[in-house]
Length: 430
Image 1 (cartoon, rainbow, N blue to C red):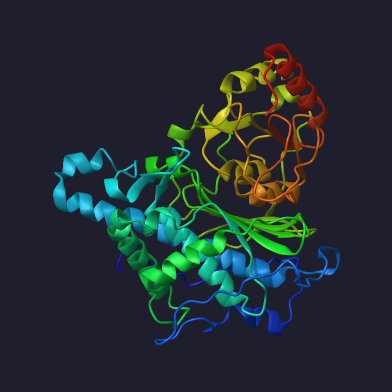
Image 2: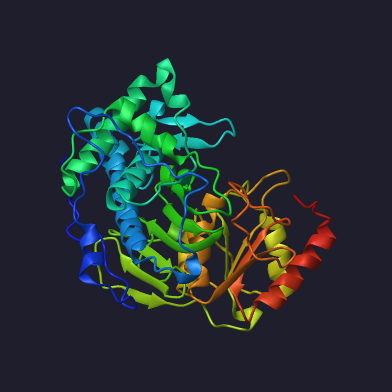
């Protein structure tokens, strides 16, 4: 596909890691699952699988695979826009196209569906999930595979979704072929459905589980704004590595900028972190990695904070009350997705507040990768009662009311302001 450029370098080794030649060779093509005469057959983990404790493990191989998977998925997401922009150009006057260049309206109406919770899902969401699952299993063929992911194939198996399934399959195959790493037979529609359903693991506190949001911030993606491919790894219920691919996030700071004033990046950012190894940032185009750290400000008045772009995702009024108690002078930076975690990890802001509406249950894929990216950059995260986030309970986070992310110096003051504001507003706990 002409609109997708091959990635000359998808993976940089963590500078702090000491890798031997056999580990580096893990990035070579592996042809484990596909042939002209065989269909897709994933390696599935069992609850009895014996896995080494995270306390004694290095996750270098998994990090290499995760970076490659997220990077390739970001290419697919960008390609999906290019394909449908071409569709627009073929059917609309130039002046209409120009007015839509900063909004990804190129998606055909049939490519944007509504799930049972009324949230949108696109061909890119499904395609990204297929690619990440495919790459992880190709790169780590000897490891038991368990994936907790957002999407399933239920809607795609309906008769009226066949055209959408065909487009997803073509988009995935074109991306794999353009990358050139995997010399495998094209995936069939049946293969794609099977791979999507590899993401139905329940996670938990036993063994290793990948955690994926194939497009975190689908509404941002549809607007042409911020979104992220968010991939984390749990080991015995603890997040041990995370990768955030943010195709529209610029490498420079976005401090004191609102969503609609951000300059879109031509290459995007890749954040990655491994337990006890720090957090690094590089461009998706392959710039040298830079170690990042959260803001070290300890004066709340000098702090700026992030919150969700969509008011339906988090209470802006509650965040405003908390900011007022803290004396924060800067306006909130409102952007979509776990790109907020990435921006916070490099010090663009000092506080991230998330307070969903009553009844909403936080999913682990919405926070796992971002959590470790911030934690390894020196930040801390808790719920409104001050308890650490617990990713060991399955697909959902059991927490008190909301999520607070900041640096260690600010956390006591932020936590007090949160609790005082909750009492004043009498916001029921979730």
